[in-house]
Length: 324
Image (cartoon, rainbow, N blue to C red; front, side):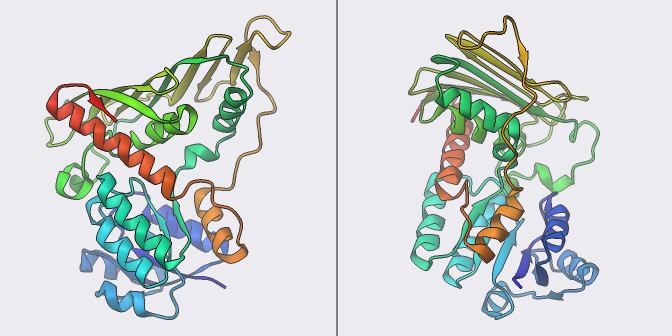
């Protein structure tokens, strides 16, 4: 059986990941946290050891892999150490705030031959897999426009922790958090970016962006609009893909709609049999560690995401289009 160490409870998904680890049948042997008081409390709740020193935790023989939910700005230091200790790595997104940091992590992972997965749950969804399929098959023609929105009211309803707005830990605001999903979504569906323009604002007057839009042009001439916010009430996640020969629309709670020159049905068809969902990121990771099965989104996808995020923030701060 595989043994897991939980590295920090900083991220809001940490508890959910711990639950998924146990549902899989893996054992949480120990916990480390940059906040020792929080970590010790969580370790007690999990019935696991608390290790105040990360280096000592990584020496333990009863740790096969780590689940990293530490502040984004700490990822490089933590994950390089984990890789050098020979521990397989599951990490929350974003991998880091700069491509340079991603490259250092990647080098350590490759040199030490450990498994690596970054959590990208939208890439597991049937809707996303169907979109990728029809794009690759040419059923939408040339992709001209892609719009993805992901937003909630965590900042206006005050259900996110206060430290979520500390740039020194989070690395950014809405775009660095919820914006990861549409950002890796457009990267997966459109390929290499060419240029980006961003406009973020600060509705709740906190230090980081809580309402953000980026427009990206890709090498295939597709324009992508990425929308995200922490100030939107009951905002449905959605994506729309427009091509020269077809259109695909997906909105929460509604049927996946598809129209194309290459199908007989006029108007929009409701897709009732999209591809089967991939295993969740945690199951995919633990399966890779225990069974050697493939990982669908690893170092390259993580780097591509950070590249978009880094350029998005540079564009916003400088008030200009940034080239890749």
